[in-house]
Structures are given as C-alpha cells and as structure tokens.
Amino acid sequence: MSDTTNPPVKTEEEPPAGDSMMQRIVAGNALISVLAVVIALVIGGFLIAFANEDVREAATYFFSRPMDTISAAWTAVSDAYIALFRGSIFNWEATTFAGAIKPLTESIVFAVPLILAGLGIAVGFRAGLFNIGAQGQIIVGAIFASYIGFAWDLPVGLHLLLAMIGGAVGGAVWGAIPGVLKAKSGANEVIVTIMLNYVAVYLISYTLKQPVFNPGRSGQKSPAVAESASYPPLIPDWLVPGNSFRLHWGVIVAILATMAVWWLMERSTIGFELRAAGANPNAARTAGMSVGRITVITMVIAGGLAGLASTAQVLGTEGALTAGVAASYGFDAITVALLGRSKPWGVFFAGLLFGALKAGGFLMQSLTQTPIDIVLVVQSVIVLLIAAPPLVRAIFRLPDPDRPRRSARTAKKQEVAA
Image (cartoon, rainbow, N blue to C red; front, side, top):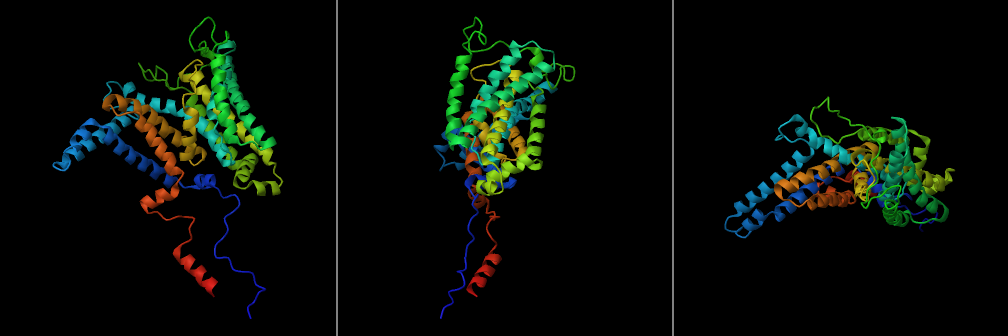
C-alpha cells in the first residue's frame, strides 16, 4: 500500500516570484559585460572589413590568392581601430601635448551626460521600472537650466548652482509624471515615458520660437548662457597653454553624482526600499512598504539625474539651448545602464567607454572612410549580448553560476530516488 500522507518530492525548485529578465540582466557579473564588449568589437571588425573597398576587391580572387584578402582585411580593421584609439584616448601624431591628450578630454565630454542620464536609468532598473524617458527628461531639464542661465542675473557660484538645480528640477518634474500615473492608475511606465519623449520634442520646438528664448531671431537657438552660470573649464589655459579643450567641471558633477547614487542605493533606507520593490513588489508590500510611493520617488530621482545631464550641454559644451540639445544621449544612456549592470560605478565606466566610442568614431571615419554607423552597430551588439548572458557563456564555454554543479545535481537525484 502506498503512503499517501507524505507530499510529493519536488525535483526542481520553483523560481522566486521576483525573477524576471531585468533582474537577471542586472544581476549578471562584470565578466559578461567585458566579454560582450570584446565580441561586439570582433563583430565590428568583420563589418569594417566587409565595408572596405580593398577587401571587397581582393575577395573577388579569394580562391586563387586568399592571403591578399586576409591581409587587406587585417589592414582595414587594424587601421580603423587604431584611428578609433587615436581619436578617443591619445593621438601620438599630434604636434603638441595639448593636441595629443585632446581626444581623451573629448571622450570625457561625451561621457558626462551619458553617465548622469545612465545613472537615472539604472536607478529605475534597480527598482524594477523601465524608464525610457530620459530623452524627454533631458530636454525639459535643458529648458529650465538654460532659462535660469541666460535670463537671471545672479552672482558667480550662486547662478551656476541655481541653474544646475533648475535642470534637475525640470527633469524630476518630467519624470514624476509617469511615476504618479503608474502609482495611481497602474499605467505602464514604458508607454508613458516614450510618449512624453515626443511631447518634450515638440515642447522644445515651441519654446525656442517664443520671444524670451529667441528674441528677434530666426534660428533655433536661445541666447547664450551667462558666464556666471557656465561650468568653468576643468583644465585652464595656464596649466596647458594653447589648449582648446571643451572639458568642464561637469565631469566633477558626474563623479559626485555617481558617489551619491552609490550611497543612496547601497547605504540608505530609501535605497533598500527601491531594491526591495524591484526584487519583489509583493514581498515589499507585505513588509509594509508603499510600492506606489517608491515608484514616484524612483522616477523623480531618475528624472532629476537626467535633468542634471542636460546641464552638461547647456551650461557646458553648447552654452545655449538648441533643438538638438539632447542628441541621442537619453537613448544611449539605456545601453550604458545595461552595460554597467545598473551599478553606479559600472555605469560610470560604461559611460566612459561609450564616450570614447563616440569621440573616436569621427576620426575613424575621416581617416579610414569607415562608416561611423559601425560604432552604432557595436553598441547595439553590446545591448543584445547583455540581454542574453547565456549566449556569451556559450561562446566562451563559461559555466552558469545559477545552475547547480553536476555533483550537486547527482546527489539530489540520488536523494529523490531514495
């Protein structure tokens, strides 16, 4: 007679309730991110070779002289990546020291808004929210910061501080809208933030046509931000004579913001609540946390960081509000947050990498006629591989840390059989 009193033995553990694709992406280790970049660069190398005219010509007689094709491909890829390095890190062919290190400063300039906006995206990811609205939050923050920068007459120091706060407040207000809608009505934050991006694009177009932002002009540009509201240069002329660096104190803001977000997420009570709500909202509710309040706070913080990213443009490199002030920083920041595994310092270094790719892509295109779209393809491949860690592990034959070892599985099967 069978014993029906004992419950059946489960051979597989049920996945936790909070297990999701985003959590698996965020929880991945740094090695996967590094290997994803390596694979993306290799794929980019193949695309560079295919796009090169000499390689295509040599490929027409590949079977008679295959080494010609291989040599042409190696030359094309190596020349392109060397030019990418020269345009992003160090140009050893420059005649002056300032010219040699200028590529590194340009990489950092491009990285600053990516880091700040990426931190905002990362905070949302850690809380289980897909904030796709950094582009719109940057635009609205830029409107606020630029207006304070050129319309107000304030002392040095105070003017810059208020312009920075204005940019952060503008982004925070724009980020709060989807947060409140999700908390009160359950609206999907992905759809709301995407739609608000379009609203922001038309808003800045309307704003730049107003007399305050465009007095007596026909162009799409506001008056220049006052010098008292501009980020001072990080490397003054007396330190490196004859330099034309665009690097400003916004990089210090990015470093301080990274440190602040790290403390917020890892050491503060609100950071613990954000992580708890992102891991398992039901358990967070059971523990007495208000998930709706956490959602609003998360989107306000994310929007504030994206708005702060806008100040790097309007108070730094651009010095005025333009229709393209946000460029594609809001969308590129999503890739930066993913590559950085939504960890503050991971986002910081991912932003530096993407800033280097952006800065070096221009010299690579001008010297080797390699399409700059190759850089976009590399970024896209990185996103694809970050979203599919098993693919990276399969390519490099890495073990899955979440999968029990063979000995443990064997012991468990023996226990079940017994």
